[in-house]
Image (cartoon, rainbow, N blue to C red; front, side, top):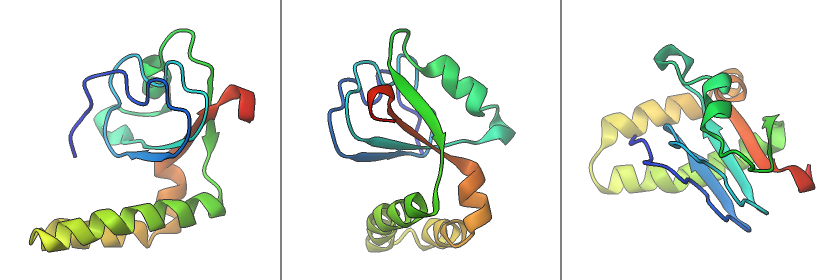
Length: 120
């Protein structure tokens, strides 16, 4: 999982994104629609407080907890990634991801949802 260099989801107007690494600085500036599922990795120092510091000044977004409906969406989107991993013979990574996606408790505590403040 790579980290982004900055300006993740800048001017996002719709759609759904999953970010598994650090979104980089100035994230979500100008975001007016859509949903971002951001994975947190507190053991590497990337917790919710660090995420808040990554959000661009002036960005009008909210960080929300994940719901059970969000879990369904995350799993559905990640199934495409799993398929790509298997098609490129990355079976070990696919198996780790599959195990991660089966743990509701872990997913609920590892992901947050970022949405425009005007829609929350």
